[in-house]
Image (tube, rainbow, N blue to C red; front, side, top):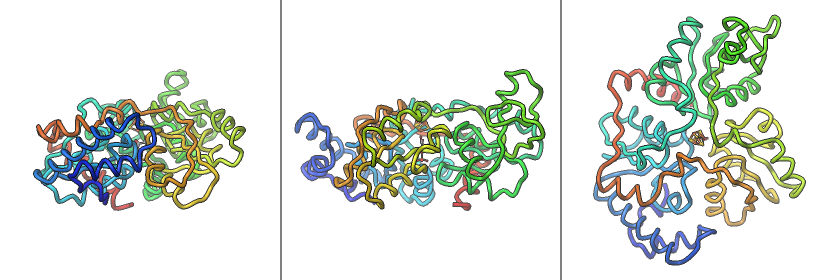
Length: 363
Ligand code: 13P
Ligand code: SF4
């Protein structure tokens, strides 16, 4: 629980921001942000609303209005437990949809209507139905970074925190794992499984999905255990092994952390890989000279705001264009006007709920 999220006095919020924000151009800007945050916290109180904020939110918002901050998995759990009338999701659409799947009778608001996700847009419900036809009886594990209709076609969801555990819980010879290509490869690496990408194979015109190696090339006698899909995160696909090497040349003692949506080569080269919360915990519980985070760059600023003794290298240049749309100004406007409300067809929601609940049971 974030104490600042209960404050409605702009001066108190100004003090919080002055202490935690590093790159603020002027006191005037800080004052404006503090006033906006105070209005939001007041509206929250009046409307019995709770705000859930993903770890990628911009620092001024992250430190002031979310009652709870966290990773996708942590916020799904918070959403499942929420007893407010309204849930405002300061994150992207698939996260707000998960909150609605779990809370059909509550109002769920997303402050920016267009806040999507490149992974969620990489696959449709029809794609999943075709995969099922092609691989009958094979269970489908779907990353939560997907829309409700895709979840509804799935057996179980997972997040970056529990992807390997969910796959291993299935006790199946073969598992369809969608839609993140790199996460699938990293899970395959972690669980010692062979992976096949039927889309790549189709493009090569080499047949109809016989087993291949990790890059889609045919591999004699190889039985696939994981069937992947070619979705990518527009932020994490940008990081390269050379970025790590260059950072290590300039800062030999730096510790490198990479989100599992990064390529397997980057994850292999990093010192630690895990969900957004796992990275935060790692930084908080270790004592390195400096850290390089290969993920959305607001997160580094947010960690430094809460841990001023930590040195995070300012070599980050990747902001998520979707997360970046969520601002204090829009959140205030949306809460005041009760928009944009998330709606999901009941038949889709009920089927998606099964996949989400299975994931929450596994942990
Ligand atoms: P986490 O589940 O690790 O919070 O990540 C969500 C996400 O969108 C990463 O890009
Ligand atoms: Fe989607 Fe990548 Fe943005 Fe996360 S960082 S919300 S995976 S586009």
